Length: 447
Image (cartoon, rainbow, N blue to C red; front, side):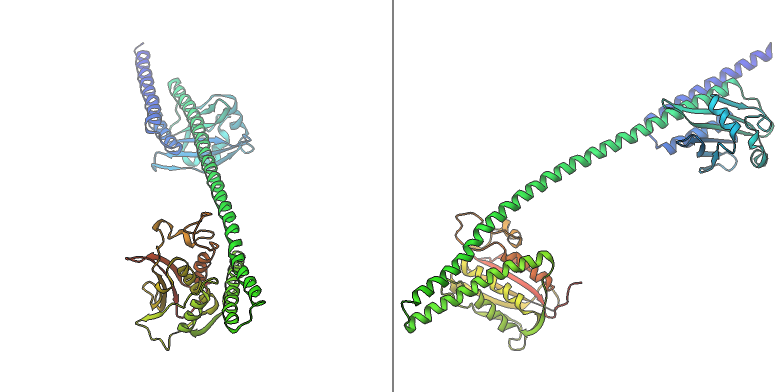
C-alpha cells in the first residue's frame, strides 16, 4: 500500500513538472517569438531533461510520407545539437507502420520490440540505446513527423505520465510548425502586397514621367519647327531680295545672312542627328590634335545668331600659354559645345556683354576649362540641373521670349562626358550666367 502511495506521489509530481514545462514552452513561443529552429532546440532539451532521455530528436516526413528527416537532435552526453539524418520507409517498414498507426510507440525493450528492432544492428547496439519512446507530430492536415526519446543504459519502462507528456509535446510541435508556416505565408503575402503597392506606385510614377516626357516632346516638336523655319526664312528671304537687288552692298549683307542662316540650320539638324546617334550608341568619337584658341574662335563664330549681327566674343586665357595650347580630342564636338554656349549667351545677353575665358580646370587633372560668361538674367537655381536634360529649357512656355529646341545643352553634356569631361552652369555674383566645360588635354576613350 505504501509503495502504491509513493508511486502516486511520484506520478503527481511528474504530472506537475510536465504541465509546468508545457506552460513554459507555450509562453516562450508566444512571448519570445523564437524562430522554429530555436523553438525545436528548446523542445529537445526539455525532453532530454524531464524524461531522462540521453538523446531526444524531432523528425519530419517528406511530402510522400516515405522518408523521415531529422531536423533537430540533442545528444545529452556531447551536449550538441545536430540534424540531417534520414530514414526511409523501405528500410524500416515495421517502424514506419508503427508510428503511422499509433500515436505513441513506447518500446521499453527497443532491441527486441518488433516495432523498433529494425534499428538494433548498427544503431541501437552501437549507441547503447535500450529503450525508445516515440510519438506522432500532427496538425490539422494530419501526420507531420515523429518526436523521439532514446534511453541509454539498462532498459526502462516508460510511465503513462511520460508517454502523455511526450505525446503532448508532439502536439505542441505540430501546432507550432503549423503556426510558423502560417506566419511565413502571411509574411510572404504582406511582402507581396508591399511589392504590389510599390509596383503600382512605380507604375504611377512611370506613367507620370511618360506623360511629362510626352509633353516635353510635344513642346520640343513645336519649338523645333520654329528653329528650322527661322533660318530657312532667312535664306529664302535673302534670296528673294537678291533677285531684285544685286548691288555690292546688298550682296555682302544678304549673302552674310544666308551664310549665317545656313550654319544655324545645319547646327539644328546636326544636333537632332547627334541626339539620334547618342540614343542608339552609334556616335563616333574622332580625336585629333588642334590649337584650342583657333577652335574656340571658330566655335564662337558658329554660335552667332542667323537673324542678328552678332560679334565674336573676346577670348582671354588665365595662366595658360596662348600660342602653344593644343588639345587631343574630337574637334567637331568641341566646336558644337562652344557654339551652343555662345548662341545661348547671344540670346540672353547684350552682344557686347559676352566673353570667353580659358583656364586650368579646377576639378579635373590635366584638363582645361572653357567658360562662356554673359551679362544676361542668369539661370534660376532650381533649373540649373534640368537645362542639361533632354527637351528641358529654363522657359518652356509657348510665350517664351527666347528660341531653342531644348536639345542643345543635353547634347553638350553627353558630348563632354564622351570626351572624358563635364559641363555645368552657375550664376555670376553680379548678373548673368557662367556656362563651362572641362575637357582633358588628352582624350582617353571610354571603355
